Every structure is written in structure tokens, then in C-alpha cells.
Amino acid sequence: MTYIEGFLTPVPTANRDRYLEHARTAVPMFKDFGAVRMVESWGDDVPRGKVNDLWTAVAASEDETVVFSWFEYPDKATRDAANAKMMADPRLADMMQDMPFDGSRMVMGGFESVSDAGDGSGSGSGYVDGIVLPLKTADREAFGTFARSVAAPFLEHGALRVMDTVADDVHPGKQTDFFRAILAGDDEQPSFGFVEWPDKATRDAGWAAVMADPRMQGDDAPFDGKRMIFGGFTILIDA
View 1 (cartoon, helix red, strand yellow):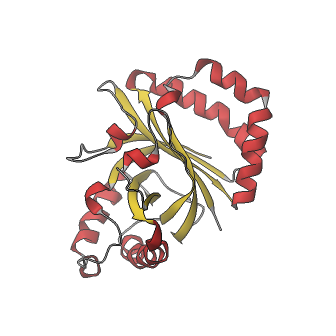
View 2: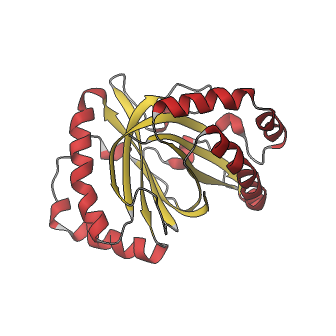
View 3: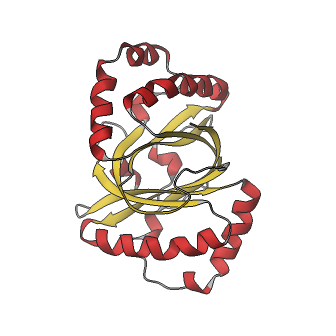
């Protein structure tokens, strides 16, 4: 089953081109490590929240943009082997010398997929909705069932792929982390998910149709939606 390494990164808006070049440089390295896909997306429609949001998740300032990204691996074993290779590879050390963002505020972790609906390759994606939400540890199975049921309306209304995951290898950080991002309780863990669309126009129309779909009118979501953080992103790299 697909294993996801998810990231949230605060990048100075003025450094967009530098970040893009930095990410492009990393693509062949992570392919060597075993990643089957690497996606970097730039914040475009990222709302401020009343309780929490993607901005506070990475302690972003007004002159920064939130980047939502992920690596895909065929399984956890491949991802773990990739991380071991990464730590020993001199190319990574070189990349760390001149990063165009504050790596100390990057949020990252490993997630197991519980629902992967649509085109697993993400072919044709140009826009993505990124979501992080709080999930009670005991509700993992219920969340998987819920995620698979709500994926259908999204796919019918224009989405290419809907991915939902639960935390597997996610740890507290010194400044930021996925747990603080969702204000997690002791019995909660983060879920990292995304909806891929061909473009922003399809996404905007799709969301309007999804919200009007009677299948989405229930109140059975097994998580606290008030602490769910989300936003729309334009894809920079899809390798």
C-alpha cells in the first residue's frame, strides 16, 4: 500500500524560483532512493483559520508562502530504506548548505494510506487541495471507511485522485510539527490528505458541486472538522 512522506514548508515568497530549482535538484536523488513520485505545490488559496491553519502550522510570516509537498513510496520498507540512504548521501549534505527556506520550521512525517481513490499516478494534475486533520487513534478504521465513501463525489465532480492517510512515523518537533498543527489531544494523531484536480477552475467548480451533493450532507465525519487545516496549491513539480 502506498506510503506517504508529507511536508509543510514555509518559503519566503521572494524565493519561489530558488525553491523550485532546489526541488528540481532533489528529484533524481530521491528517485535513486526509491521514491515513485515527488510533488511540490505552492500555496495559492490558503485561508486563515479561527482556531488553527496551515500558516500557523509552520509559523509562517506575512512574506512567506506555505508549500505542501509529498513523496510517494510503494511501501514503508522502501521509505525507511530511502531515509537511511539519504542520510549517507553527500548530495543531501550539499543541498542542506544553501536552503531557500527555514528548515527548522518544516513539518514532516510518514503516513500510511487508508484510502487511495482515482488515478494513482496523479497524471494530469495541475492543482491540489491539501488537508491535515486530527483523528482519534481509535477511529482509524472508521476514518478509512468514511474517506472511501466521500471520495466518490469528488471523483464524479472532476477530481483526479483523493488520498487519505493516518500518521505512522510522525514525531514532535522543537518548533513545529503535525501534532501542534492540529492541536492534537493525547488520544489523537494527524491525518495527511490531498485531492488532485486538473486545474484550479475544475477544482473551484468541483468543490461547489461536492458541497451541494446530498451524499456530503451527513454529520458522520470521525474527526473534529473545526481543527482541520487545508488550502489550495498550484503544482510546481510532479515527478
